[in-house]
Length: 168
Image (cartoon, rainbow, N blue to C red; front, side, top):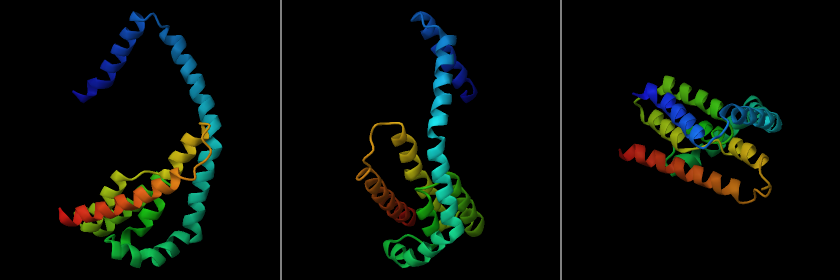
């Protein structure tokens, strides 16, 4: 059944466009042109965040932060093994998936640490990546509250994820 969902949506959309007398091909071309312009506009922002993440990992800052904050995370109920994941998740999706894969292969899929890591990945977001993409295309330039609140929510979500994994 799921194989038919997208074709059905496209057919319904095409029928709706015919009913509303919308030129589907011209509208598609206009949208594709806009998408290419959008990619060109946001590429420098994406490149900057990717370079920053690579520099964080190569320089050893994430390892240093992990060692520094491990006691605090342990006190809050977050295993020290998840510190690097918690630090990198707000910056990069692919990098945090690589850390998740490492955690799963090291501790096993059914371990407490792996379950916590999976829940953290599912309930958190790449905050700086999303802020970079969305705010680069809007007139909102004051991020004084948006990013700190998002980071706080991410930490609270991490603590709750570990608590729930311990209870369940």
